Length: 304
Ligand code: GDP
Ligand code: CA
Image 1 (cartoon, rainbow, N blue to C red):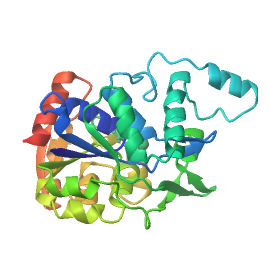
Image 2: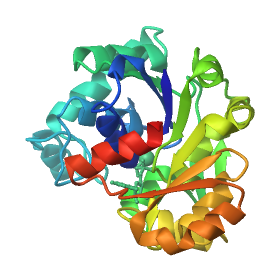
Image 3: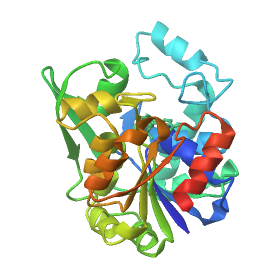
Image 4: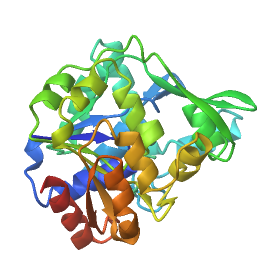
């Protein structure tokens, strides 16, 4: 089994690419839940949903989130009422959150609901939230502390971040199977997800970081930063604001104790020696997954 530590979009693309070179029934994604939120009384899990929708072939490529062919009648009506319509939830997407919330109220765990949604959508990879317990990434800013979606959606990640914290991390327990799958995987992949707000919340669940470190020789990370920039989202900006270098070398330093190998983009080839100086093996390839053949090549490299 291949284990993939996963955020949202970057991880979803890598998981889709892995399908071309590995049996999806033997892939386990351990997914960040630090972005999860309660809104309108509903439990929303953005990274789990992004992965499920992408692997089901239902993701909205234009928006970069949600379902394709979505309609917005509920949001339009809610906005007209003066309700909280800043966090856009499409009509069909809402059904996911209604279903999840109902099942949680019935006593199901987040992991169980995730498996039910994946099965419904024909997704054969095993998708596991890193924890069933509450975990929330918080952003320290000059305007005070912001929740994940206040920072990401309401402020369009356009505010200086001074610090990050993870509410609930010290008491969260790994979901069933998380530590076991890390301990026994043939390969552990750190997806090209945001190191600070997608991967770090996974590692912060007690026991997970230690489990990954124990497998360091079999851990391969893919840099989400290419030529000093994120393809999408605030990873470059956040790295810089929080004192890291926004480059594949900065990513190497973040993952130094966790990963034996870092895959960097060919545009960063000249930085390979600096990655090696961090104590990581380095592989250089095209890491942009827009083209299916490039995506397959990256997947092969990650499993090599
Ligand atoms: P989010 O939770 O949806 O924001 O997504 P993630 O944390 O999983 O991924 C965000 C990161 O994915 C960004 O830093 C992007 O640079 C990176 N990313 C997205 N697509 C690709 C890709 O095709 N290749 C690489 N190397 N990184 C990607
Ligand atoms: Ca996310």
